[in-house]
Structure formats: C-alpha cells, structure tokens
Length: 310
Ligand code: CP
Image (tube, rainbow, N blue to C red):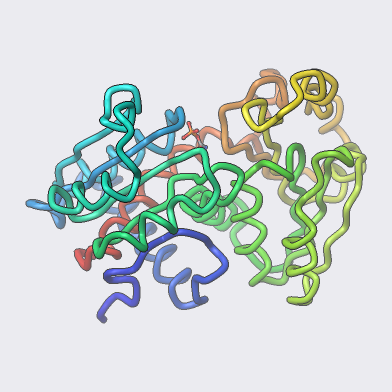
C-alpha cells in the first residue's frame, strides 16, 4: 500500500489523520520487531537526513540520527548553531534552501514557535519538526502514544493526567491533540500561571473530550491510568524569579504513588530536573526510559514514511 505520508511534512499532530496515525504506529511496531530480530533492511541507503538543531537536545537529535543509521541512511548535522553560518546572519529560509540540495529530509529544532512551518514553506523536501519553541513537538507525542499503547495495551478508555508546565511544554500540546482522538479523559495539572493554553483546551472540549483542570497532583495520581510529568521550562520564562517560585511545584515520589492504581504508567519526555524522584525509577510502571527508547522505531517510521521508503 502506498504511504499516505510520502512527501509530507510532520509539523504538528492536529492535522494528522487517523489513518496516518495508525500507519505511523504500525510501521514503528514493524521496525521495532526488525530491530529486535537484528535485521537491517537498509531501506534508506543512499538517502541523507539533515538535522538542524538550534536548541539543545539529547533524545530527539540522537534518536533521529540512530533511526537514520538503523535504516541504512546517512546523516549531516548542525548540532550547535554557533558552528553554522547563522552566526554570520544567514536567515533560516536561505539555510534550508541550501540544505535542500544536500539532503532528502530535514529534521529541525528552533526556539521560535512556527519556525518549522516557515522552513517547510521554503523547501520541497519533507521537514520534520523536532520542537519549535513552546509550539509543538509532534514526534515526541507520537512516541508517547506508541508508549502508552505498549504499556497499557490500548489507547481507548484511559484517564491520562498531564502535569507540570502545560503552558510552555510543547510535548503536552502535541500529545493532547493525539489523545483527543481516543476515548480518553484528560486531567491537566498545573499551577495557574502554567495552564494549558486556552486555545488548546477549548479546542479539545469542542472535539468532545472531557478535560479537567486542577492544581492538585495527588488526586490526579490516584485517578489516572497514565501520569505524564513534565519539566518546568526554565528557558521559556521571562522572569527568573517566577521560575524560582514555580520550579518545585510538582515532585512525584514513592509515597504519592502508594494510592495510585497498580497498573499506572508513569511517563516523562525527559530530561527531568526534580519532577520525579529517583526512587520512583524502581516502580514497575515507571516507563520514561522505555519511552525514550521508543523514539528510535517511531522516528524510523517517520523517516521511512515521509521519504516513501517504508
Ligand atoms: N524529550 C526531548 O525532546 O528530549 P531532548 O530535548 O533531549 O531532545
């Protein structure tokens, strides 16, 4: 079957169709089975992925690079903007037009919301958004969804709590739009200053999703099948004192989990700072390192699908 994603950009999760989402998840499961069996089909031999990261990253950049290597393709990278001609004043539009001649697909992270869309508008090769400021992080949401499906065995019938910096956390913006497609109840846990943007919450409610907003983490822990903790995004605060006031707003520890459902799945996009105490790592539901590892098959699927090599 021809991929419905061939030639497409992956910039946000809300425009993805249900069929495209199914295709991404099933292709990732196929690649994970291949990885587990040690097979390497070299589907992307001769193809080049350009990674342009203008904000720090460990998981997104390295798992995209690992994914491309596992598929037999090659990688060119700007890992530090100080080493690119951006420091000489080159515009992003010019840079991606040049890189279009070097690569078959671009993966990019930039600090400004909307920048991945601008890049995609400037070139004809697929652009994958690896995070645009406080906008979206679609590939993270896709690996999160894949993780929930694997850990819980289903995506329907779940209560999912998203906790922390819901204002600036691009992963939760993207994930909420994916979860809204399923029979899911969403609990948004945040301080008032860091609430999920109203345009997202309103949009979810218009889609018929039950959304509960609260400041209380303990109650949400007890009621959830999936608890998704997030970091307070220091780099997005204009007022450092406000960050200092809010940074310890939520800290998950073993005592809080004593009243949780025994089957709870605990997630975090990582990096964590102090939102989950290390003692929680021993909990059988602590899935955040498995979640990070799921980034490889999901990103293999995305690279193969948008380039038509699946
Ligand atoms: N989850 C995530 O985006 O991690 P990195 O910032 O390390 O890429």
